[in-house]
Image (cartoon, rainbow, N blue to C red):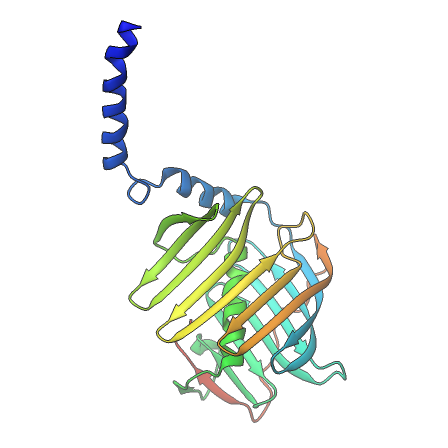
Length: 248
């Protein structure tokens, strides 16, 4: 007992000294390992039909997502009567979105556009489309670096960026899944919540919100793994305005 009474103060002093030097924010080894595990998860190809209820109305769509060294995705949105609303193509860090309602295409890759104009502010629905694109990348492990770490309500939070431009990734740890993403760009704040109902790595439901604009997207059915690869290219229709933007 005397031996332990002598050692205990030393142990306590060592513990608190290490806690002060190697605190949660400075040496997030466990948190980095969890994010590394998340990035390394097995992700087969997925496809899904989906229905969406949004602040602008009701629409349906198709989704195909191909994880890998270069993430590729196609998302098609259309009205129940079959009228096209949008098409989104993603390949790595490049994206192309066709807005059939306003007859224009916007991309961050000049090679995908010809005779383009630069700039232009995106409206709320277009911001939601971009947040969906970023969510698809994050789901495949594409998180913006560098990351800092914190925790709240049993969730791991990995944050990228600062000074009014940041992305926060919220993870549930058991099982290890991305639960929410918050995008902040100046005065714009976008939130994507992810709901899982199967063992698939991809969520069965996505909830997107930016201000008064929102969308609830439900996958039905969700094919995990998918074996049929669709055509990954689509042309820009004649007469569409072509806008090169820097987002996201």
